[in-house]
Amino acid sequence: MGLLVAISIFSFILISNSPVDPVQSYIGAEISRISPEQRTNIEEYWGLHRSKPEQYFLWSKAVFQGNLGESLIYRKPVTDIIWERFSASILLMGIAWVLSGVFGLILGILAGMNEGSILDRIIKSYSFILASTPAFWFGLLVLMVFAAWLNWFPVGLAAPAGSLRGEVSLADTFKHLFLPVLTLSIGGVASIALHTREKMIEVLSSEFIRFARAKGLSGMRLFWRHGLRNISLPAISLHFASFGELFGGAVLTEQVFSYPGLGQAVVRAGLGGDIPLLLGITLFSVVFIFVGNFMADLLYVVIDPRMKTKQAHD
Amino acid sequence: MTEIGTKYLPLKRSENWNRRKRALMTSVIAIILLMVLVVSGFFIGTDGLAVNFDASNSAPSLTHPFGTDWLGRDMFVRTVKGLTLSFWVGLLAAFISALIALLLSLLLVLNKTLDSLVTGLIDLFLGLPHMVTLILISFMLGGGLKGVIIALALTHWPRLARLLRAEIMQIKNTEYITVSRNMGKSWFWIARHHILPHLIPQLIIGFILTFPHAILHEASITFLGFGLSSEQPAIGVILSESMGYLSSGMWWLALFPGLMLLLMVAVFDSLGRNLRNILDPFKGQKG
Image 1 (tube, chains in turn red, orange):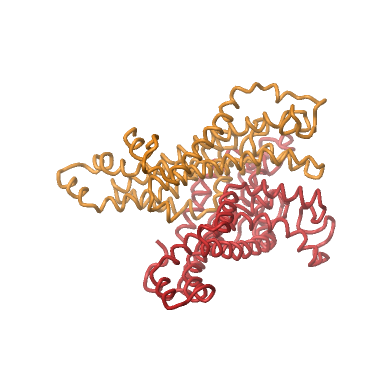
Image 2 (cartoon, helix red, strand yellow):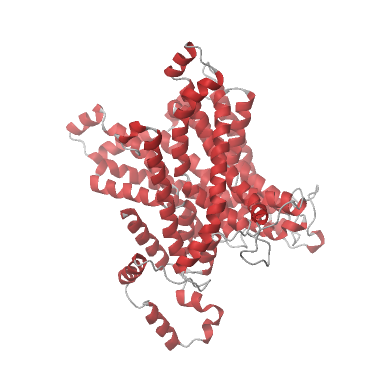
C-alpha cells in the first residue's frame, strides 16, 4: 500500500512535469480557435491553476473513490477502458504466460537432466539467443512469414475487421490470438528454461540425489520423486515474479499486432498526451505486478510448508 | 586497474588457459569485429542515405547488401548508422546507470536513513513494469535523444544496486572493517579504500550486462514511438517503418536490421557472462 502511494506520487510528479500541455491535447488541432479566456476557464475547471500538491491530493482522493477520471482520447471513463482492455490483454498474457512456463520448465528439465549433451547445448544456445531477441522484431518476422507470406493467420487485431462484439466466433478469436501469443511466450521461455536448467544441475549434484541413486533409483522415478519438487519451487516463484516483463512484452506485442489490449492503450495514451489514462494504467500495472509477487509468496508456502516460519522473500 | 587486468586476464598462453578463457576470447574478438562496424558507422558518408527513387524497394543485391527502402536509401548504411547510435546511447545509459547504482549502494555504508530511502527507491522502480517506467520518463522529457538516454539511465540501476548492496552488506560485517573503524577511520574513508575495490569486478560485469539491456530497451521504446524521432537513423525507427510494408513482401526491411541488433545484444551479453565466469567463478556458475 505504501508502495502504491509512493509510485502514484512518483508517476504524478513525472507526468505533471511533462511538456505536454493537457489543454492542448484535450482540444487537439483546434487549439488556435480558442480564446485565452476560454482557456483559463478550462484550466480553472480542471484545477490546473492550483498548486501541484493540491492537484495530487484532489486526484488521489478521486482515485480512492474509484474514479480515475476520463480518458482524453477515447472520451470514456478510464476505469471502463482499463477493464475492457484488460479483459482482452489477460487472454493474451495468460495463455502466453502458461505456455512459456510449461515449455520453459520442460526445456530446462531436459537440458538439466542431460547436462553437457548436444540437446543441452542446443537448448542453452537457443535460450541465450532468445533472451537477446527484441520481442517486437520477432513479432514482425512472424507476421511476415505466417500472415503476409503464408496467409495462415490474420495480420492483426483481435477480431475480423468490421465485425461486432458477440459475433466473433471462438475459432476467429483463436486465430487472432495465435501469433501474438507465440511472440509473447517465446521470449518468456528463455529465462525460465535457463533458470530451471541451472537449478536442475544443482539439485542433481546434491547429496540426497546421490543417495537416491545409491538406492538404485534412476531415470523418471528419480526425477518425479526428488527432482521436480525441488526445481518447481524456484521456477514457479520466478515465473510469478516475471509479471513485469510480461506486461512490458505485451506492450510491444500488442503494438506490433495492433491487438486492442492494455499495452496498446498505454502507448496511445503516452503518444497522445492522455494523462488520466496514462496514470490509470500505470497504477493498474503496479497492482498487476504486486498481485504476481504476492501470489508467488503465497504459493511458496503452499508448496513448501517450511517457508511458513521463514520470510518468503529476501 | 592494470593490476586486476594482468591478474585475471593473462594474455599470454599459460597453464590456466582453459575453456572459460577461450570463450571470453571469442567474445572479445566478436566485440572487436562489431566495434569496427560501429566505428565505421561514423565514417560512412551519408551518400547511402540520399533519396534515390530509381533504386527504391530493391531486394538485397551486391550493391545494396541489405536492400533499399521505399525512398531508395541503402538499408545497410541505415542499419550501421542505427547500430552506431544504439551503441552510444546504450553505452552512455549503462554507464550512468552503473554510476547511479554504485553511488546509491555506497550510501549503505554512510548512513542508515539514507539507505532505507534507497531500498524504497529500488522497490519503487522494481514495482513498476520496466516498459511503463520508460514510457513515463520519456513522456515527461518529451522524447528525443536526451529523453531516451535519461529514461534508460534512470531505469536500469535497481538490479545492479541490489547486487552491490548485498555485496557491501557482506563486506561490512568482516573483521577488517571493524578494525579499520576502531582505528578511527571514517566511513567515507572505509568506503573508498576497503569497499570500493571489492565492488569493481561486480560493477564492471554489471555495467557490461546492463549494456545489452539498454540497447534492447532503446530499440523497443523507439519502436513504440517515444524515443528517437523518425529522422534519426535508429533500429527502432527502421523497424517501425517496416511495419507499414509487411504485406508487400519486402522482407529485407525488417529482417536484417533486427538481426544486426540481435547480434550486437547477444555478443555483449555473452561477453558479460564470460567475464563473470572468470572474475567471479562462484557466482558465474550459479547464474
